[in-house]
Structure formats: C-alpha cells, structure tokens
Image (cartoon, one colour):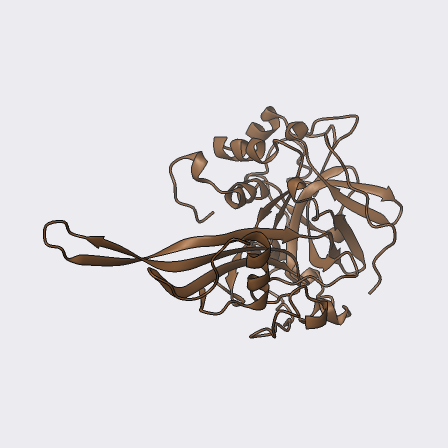
Length: 343
C-alpha cells in the first residue's frame, strides 16, 4: 500500500481499505446483484442538483480531503558560541474533508452511495496537487476555496502573510473523487425498489474468521477489516489498481450538466470570495488498457464459493462464509433519492 512500517498501528484508514479491497474481485455496476456483499466499479456522479467543487483546484467532485500547511523558521542559538541556527519546518494549519451523496454509474446502470454520511464510509483516496499526483502546490495567497475553509474552520487563525519566524509560504495537499472518475465501492447491494440499487454498509461479522483464513487473508487483512468496521460502513477507493482493468467497459458519461464538468463560480460557495486562479475544466478520462477480469483460484480468493475455478462477483448472505442476519447489513441502509437523477 506504499506504507513501509513494521506494525499494524502505522496503517492509515486508506491503507486498511486497500488491504480489504484487494481480497475481492471487481464487477462493473451493471453486474451488481441485490442481496450480495460485492465490490462494484462505476463513474462517480452527483446525486443531487447542486454543484460541488474541491476547494484548492475547483474540480467537480463528490468527495475531497485537503490539508494546508505553513512554513516557519525555527531559530536555535548555541549557548556557548552564540551562533544562530535556522531550520525550516512545515506546520499544519487545516485538515478537513467533505462528502456528498452520489451514484456509481455504468452506462444506464447506477447504484446510490450515501456519501453525506461520512461515518458510514471508509475511504482510500489518491493525493493530487494542482491536478497532478505526487506533487505539492505552494502559494503565498490562498485559492478562494482554501481561504473560505480557513475562515470557517479556523476563525481564530491570525491570517495570511509573513510574520516573525513565518516565511509566508504555504502548501496544500488535495484528494478528490472527481465527477466521471472511476471509483470502486465494497458494500451490501440492496434493491429497495425495482429500478433503484443502494450500496449499503457492511457489519463486522458479515464474514467469518474461518472464511477469511480459507481465502488467504493474513492477520493484517483481518485486523484491517475489524478496525474499519467498528461501526457498519462501505469501502471506497479511486486507486487505479482497483478500477483500470474495467475502464474500457465502463463508458465515460458525456451528457452531464455543465456544473459537473467545469467550475461555475456562481454555483460555488466561494464564488464571491474572489476569482479562481486556475478554473478547472474537466478533461475526459482516458480509456486505459486492459479489460474485465476474473479472479482465479490462488490469487487470494480461493476456497469456498469458487465455481469452475472463478470466484462469483458477489457473496450472497449466508453463503461462502457470509454471515446470515435478519438485517444482512447489521446496520442502517440509507434510502436512495426519492426520484432518479435525470441528466
């Protein structure tokens, strides 16, 4: 997971989510089967009629996490020689995230995810800065969205600019689930009405210890499952390792409202704060090589439930070690929107 450590406590929520997602084969949303514990892949689309943008890069999205840091100078003086030593450090000003309800969509097929209930979601995101992964964006004047977040969440903060021991330089890290981006979700598929599917939270006892061991889960995988499911939740990630094999079979959604494809200042909470430095216009996600895949026995999914050497896309409740509950979620299954979202 890109995290080199020697103890489980070092793993972040994202690392743990990745370990669990690794243990399930993926299916496009059109293959979702009601009543099963399933990992499905689709393109993220806002469920409501309101625009939603990331605060730093103004990307149309369904979820963002942002961290802002400031640079400061630490001054130490040698008591014997009196010489000063100055070192530069970064200190966190703000870290926050926001989420909204959305669909995972695959052509005409879609499944609802109640992102607005962050407590029922476990997330693995990809760090992006100025729209490019693995780089840091520096600034002396904040993007309008960052400025608004600071005002909302750090009202006693002293403000932007240089002061003693502060260089006046800042940087941000931003993670997003962009509109039209492929996102994978693991949860219990339910069908509250003939034409609506909902991805509902999983309970900790949905899988038995025996099933995990039979299917190649190590102690860290099991610990990740239990740590993430202290309360019922769905797992979500935009890591390409979980989505790229299905990308060619899940079409890009071309007919979306303008506010889902480009930054519209009038529909943004910070549109009145100031003009964005670099308005974001969404570019089509490139089709990636590969295709739909099945997971063969011996790839971590061997054992109970294997049919003809290939693992089924879903795990029916009460089958293959999946616990049978009167309420198979062991928790709350959110209602989908009262009416389908029309584009």
